[in-house]
Length: 338
Image (cartoon, rainbow, N blue to C red; front, side, top):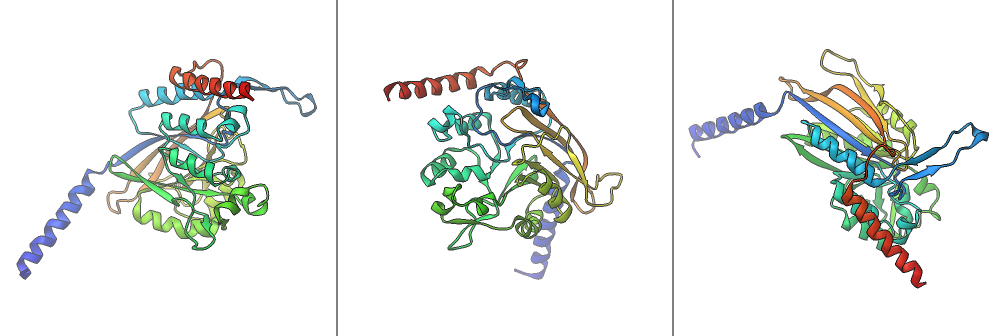
């Protein structure tokens, strides 16, 4: 190739890159819907009052079919992209969850169109046959960066996934807590899978710069607990949003953790959100990112979040309600044969 042709070829590449960059939106709004610590609660349930603890109790809350109604309503009404994710501990101890070792829980999540799920510590109560079956059956990736195979050091699951949102790359990565390391006899799946836990701060510090080279926005699906999420936001730069789990914390509006100097277009903060437990709430975090025209980098410009109560005022989604009833009929039929 002659020098002239090489120059022309290089110019075409640069022009194409500039045209591609120009097509990216100056502002991007995303609504993140989040669940965590569902623990197999697909039916509505009640929690009795506890006068000794001055606890009034809860009546007729939660339910996957009600949650499905809200998720579908938000998607239908939103002009901006809506991304539904989970921060771990789908595994539960309800009759339906234990009867099918989580299969129904993931079928529901498939039908609701989850983008990704962090692996929680209780997922490691399943032994390999159920763990792998549920993972293969999921139409979304299970992500976890700090549980690795003992013999190779390779992650058990994808450390992160990148989703394209109108040309903007959104990375989700997952981290889980150290209970699986401290209580190996309880989380028997760890030994059976041949994996080990590794410190999440070190993993995040190494991984976030890699993701920032491949993605425009970085979201952590955390199963570390609220306090650890706040510490991580302060310790590891480059995380845009943390959607958490594990501590069953009811964070009514996201905690805005200061990490940098704010500007006219940059909050300088990382939102940390968590939606309680057992599906009593659905987390809704609305974020607006701005793209700097010079650097091309997206930063968080605005964030508003809330927890949507899942209660008896919400009608059951017919499809999900029918699905749960069908599986309940199968469970009862099995029980009757014993």
